[in-house]
Image (cartoon, rainbow, N blue to C red; front, side):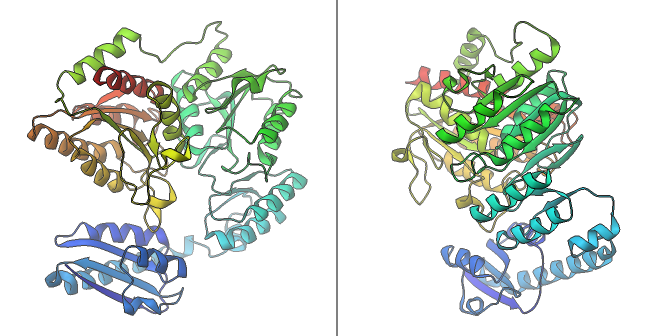
Length: 517
């Protein structure tokens, strides 16, 4: 293998376009790696870490485009030419669309003067400045950008409180406002359930399951993952739940988050006491005692929160269940384990949704002891820098260590497919656990892409006389562009066992591990 770099001075492309082209180049015959980025210091550091920072690229400036190809020497020149052609085609396409793509907030408002919400997705160092502009113009803000200093977040959220505006974020990836799905969100019916979530896939899971119970949503408001940390003190969640309490269409409020800082949790519950409407609290992995002294209802899991909200709206005394009976779980586990070879005993969880991953780690730990992860419950069980799996391991593939310079696996599934192939090489692996997340922003056929990898992994295990069990759940609705039913069938077609929720998938895995050990 050889490497070649090309720097195109003063040539700008957005990161989404570059990631898409990089993916297409990497798929070509004879190519091991293809990276196309702007020459920022952060991107050059990523290239250096990957051993791709060639001398030609070291002096690149932030406004320069850097192309680095790693592959067979005889195809490098041709690949560089094809990359240039793809970039030229992309630029020509963008030029044709320029009249519809204003370059500033002011330009966008000139085109759409009645807009009242702006989604901001720019590098973190510029995001606060743009958000402040929007708030000053009286616009609600969804701040998709990450790497925003926490001091800026606090300032922006205080400003939003003063102006009675939403400041969703930073790093807010999911919201549904007045029925419109924003960023990574699912297509759900309108109805009386309101959600405030400091968790993107947590919001998706609860809203999708509420919809699948035949109940709709008023609003799904994201706060950003740091909102319930000690420094930020729940500024946005408190404001948003008060807004839903005053909203005539909202009949019940669901709060979704990982456990807040202790003092923030108390502050949130003090405010919950003042609300007129019922509240369901799902602080995933937290202490149920947090709702003591309030009228709030505790929910153990994302599934539990959704089902309790739906039951309240339906006026049902008992919560309907997505749960399988214990004997059904046992039957699935027995069917899977009886085909396995003697060395097989470990789990590998490969998640694209961060909150779904956290929920799995919590539930698996309860039954199996500690689980290794890049997001572990205890520091002692954190994966090492090489991120290699150890014994029972569950990985959030959307964390920064996997996505630096690469698209999120909900957008581009190849990262998980590569990891699945790697895990299938381990003769001690018995079961792969995975999620598939649907909705706007996600890949248009994530289950179809996963199915290709599942088929190859199962074949690899079969070739050595073993059997690889794959247990999956799909987060989404029938109304999503990918369609829940279609996606579930794609997985079943290649032998995956598909469960109705993440919780039920984990129950099956827990039983498999118990039977094997």
